[in-house]
Image 1 (tube, rainbow, N blue to C red):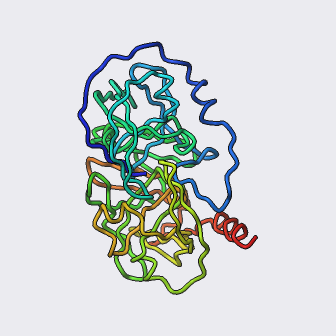
Image 2: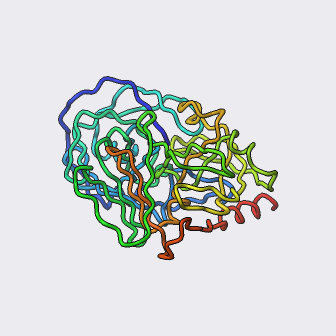
Length: 327
């Protein structure tokens, strides 16, 4: 998920005409058999929420907004189709650890009417990304990301745009920035502080081993996590009894626990921490992430108006993995 590139940023002109968007969609939507005990962190082809992005003046392609990635990423299929110029090999940090990856030069990248130029982006196989690319934090600074799960829409807008007023029960949480990621300042489990980082690029929530040690010894099942780089790491999946974020309480959230590299990057390997994935965010009606104001808004799905709203996470994925592990 998280990607970090250290390379020169150059400007270049694009050679060749852009292909039609449907050609890239066909490449990315090719069916593939996947073992249910393997969780593809970046792939969510059924409920995928994307934003239209134009690369080097091309027609728009579907990109996932990934608040857990430091850098924008493109699929190798898109880079090849647009004939993007090859860049240097870059170092990337994913769930599975640090590695090197090929990169491409992106002369311009436009999302929501705002254009960025001179990006150098790592390139990975589209089957691991689940989209034509990922919009990372390098393109989200000064922006606001809105996820509307009722409508199945994801939107990126300038943070200067007046915020939409929500009619439902709204929870506002302040955050602090660490390497560009927003770490929620008000999250606890059993009264103990938990460092929570929003990760819209991951299907599942991932916890570190320090958080796992705080749990009562509950049953767990082994799982394999596959990152957007295609690399894998082993984890164990177990439900959190209750985690409180602001005034929202989430019960029975399945979390994959592992000693993932991003926790070391953030200096959180020895403190209870988790990456809150789309499985948890989907429990809300809407989620707004304001990078300029360092603020997150969550709209509850009911309108009871209690001090703490209780949500119950879906455990279907955990049940399927457990069944597969026993076979």
